[in-house]
Amino acid sequence: MTKETDVPGPERRLAAVLSADMVGYSRLMEVDEMGTLADLDHVQLRDLADRLGDLERAVSFDRRALHERIDVLQAELVERHKSGRATVDGLLS
Image (spheres, rainbow, N blue to C red):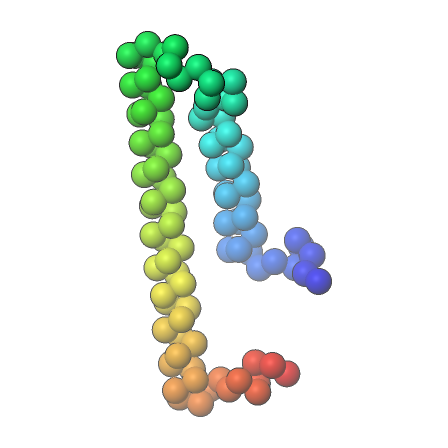
């Protein structure tokens, strides 16, 4: 089993950022606000919509960056296997 201290630097930083983001996301809208959406005035609804839009843009940006990283890693794995620098047996041992 991998301990948190065994996680490489970039992945540890990503985990910390995602954890911090989750705290921020939970503050976006308090649980008790969900039941009162119909009671919010136009200004409050616009503010909430703006915050949700900001969140959506941030999540989309992060997702795009992660998928770009995944694409680079996959391309490197394919290249290593094609060139013989990596083998399935080598990965399993």
